[in-house]
Image (tube, rainbow, N blue to C red; front, side, top):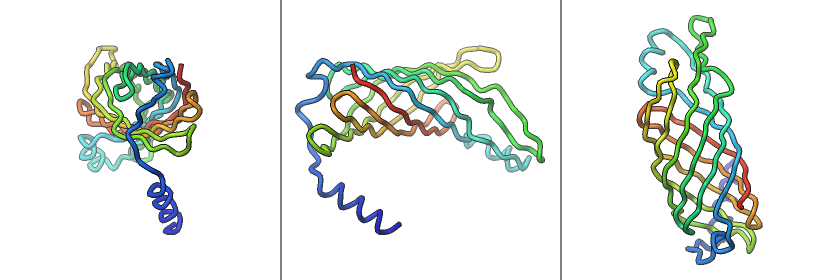
Length: 185
């Protein structure tokens, strides 16, 4: 494990970290469409209840439809739709309790902080920024909630994109992991 870590550090140090002057936006690729998965984890506010009830929460999975407008080589406007594919599940006293998981729509603005060129056709970028999500609760009442999200994005051949990132929804105190693949248009 230590050797793998050292190898990864050497690879990253051997690559030149640069601010790119040429981006896929200069080649008229100003839209990304991606599909992925989002896994939401337990909010801290429910930890006390869980400890008192001796419950275990199973992370909720959802399908992520992600689009990104790219008006500039540094600024991105992400649009997303999160559709839960399973209920929220709690294991309390050896009984599985299920609740409806809420779908969410969202948008915001993100900025590319840095890019690392791997070779002439591949690069890794890191994007971060504030977003707003529109959630629908159990009674289909809308609720607006701010969140912060960041992702590492591997782009290859000016078309193919893979990404992995994290988000924290401040309004409902939920941490999430998301990942997927996409195409630039």
